[in-house]
Image (tube, rainbow, N blue to C red; front, side, top):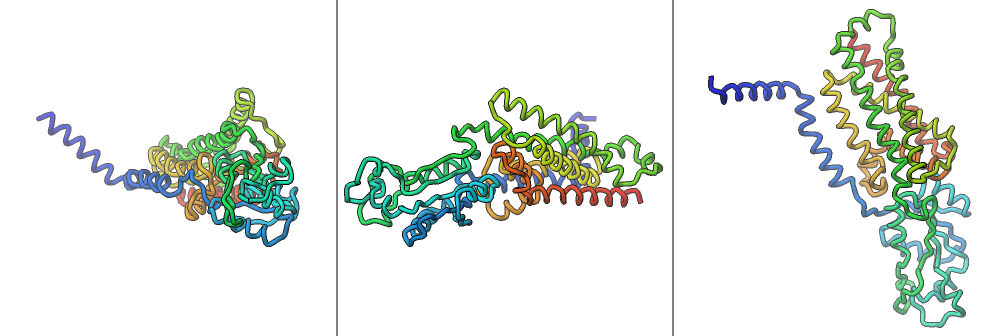
Length: 381
């Protein structure tokens, strides 16, 4: 027989098998499609409409016009009004807002005397000349967001005045919290813990049930008195310790090699990590009950990992994503843990102040265990 005919026969056989394997064929189409949509629409480093707050000590018409002028840049959107500075700082720490504008009570005098916003009358003194109109407090843990707010530092306010601006003095003073040196590694190390846990935890359990079936152990499991929920819990327990070891390695080396301190409580960090590990493991179990082979489980794992990593806020700001992408991100455990670990490690936030993220991880774990148990029970029947 001609070698070309033999090769063609093998190739035809592979194509027919691929055609029958609808899951693999679907992944061939969906993985590049999802990546294209994520990078084309959801991933954006040029952030707009960042949620920010304001502490207005002036309570004047001029301060309201100042807020409207800043909001017209579309870089920020004022979503909260605070009565005092501690309340505003707490909102930044818990990621309710990414920055706060502090408008002083003498904003009108500062605006008049600040040559950077263009006024003809000479200043009373050099000290008054250097005074900015207002101050930004910024969550500096994310360098992209900090850079976007810093871009407003010399924002001209000629709309409020009659004369052109002189750029000698910045319009706003910008104070960066949590990462004043703007070191990227400070933001990357805690986020890397979330990414690595997402990859490994889902990967470990996504093939758990499938592996039992392929090894011929399913009949033995059917005959044992082990309940489906007990099997699911038993499958995830060993990997909880593995996940804990990974977090210790990442944060420990981050401190030793890159001087990234853990500012928050280790107990609260452990609780948040435990919730995320169990949520990721149950997500892997759900995949394992759907897949029919280990190859399919790996394909589905990749399908879940891509949006989990890209939409979690690890590399690209959550606020820069379109609304549809934010809804998808909120459904994934990685997004919530990214906020929790960065809040605890970098900002020393009490996790009770990030209760929605804690509740979601807990509900996701319980719901995931229930779904995986029900699906496994149906397969036994």
